[in-house]
Amino acid sequence: MAEPATLTDFDEDAAEAAALAAAVEKARANPRSVPHAEMRLWLLELAAGNFEAPPPVAREL
Image (cartoon, rainbow, N blue to C red; front, side, top):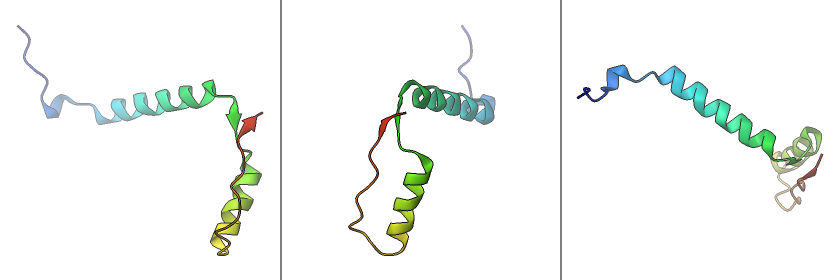
């Protein structure tokens, strides 16, 4: 019977790379998004104190 893996056997870099690859794949599978320029303008409005500014709407790009 194989010995259980210990914490020293855990490859944190490989786990992080796998998690990032999975997140990118999930994001690319969803065609709906908000253009960067629109998100930037909304965030600038929030930074200026306009907390009532409506958030940008995701749409098919």
